[in-house]
Image (cartoon, rainbow, N blue to C red; front, side):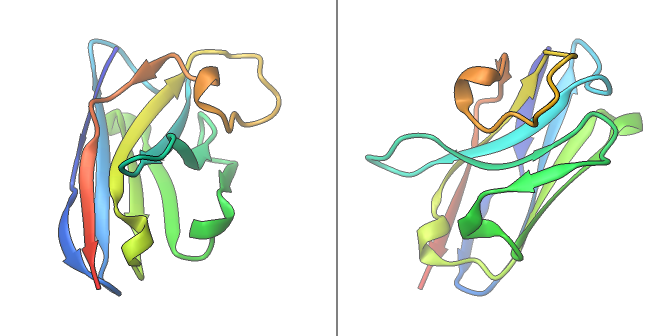
Length: 126
C-alpha cells in the first residue's frame, strides 16, 4: 500500500486547510488510519486517528476542537481538516496505516503504524 498526502501549503494564522491521504496498491477500508506531524528539530508527534469505519476517533490535546479526521473508504481516502491554524502547527504532516486488525485501543504512537506517506508541508505564518 502506498500513501500519498496532499493539501498542504502556506497559510496565515487562523486560516484552514484540508489535507488528504490517498492510498494506491491496496484498500484502506480495513485499517485504522492516523495523522502525525513533525516540526523541524522535533520528534514526530501524534495528531489524530480514526477507526476503520470512522466510528471512533482520537485527537492530540493541542489540536482538539480545531482539527477533524474523517475518511471515505469508497474513495480510499483519509482527510484531516485543520482549522484555526497557529504558527505552532507548522510541520510536515504524515498519514499512516495500522494493519493490526485486532487492536482494541486506537494507536497513538508512530511505532504502531505500518505504512507511511511522504508527507505534506503545512506552514503557518503569524
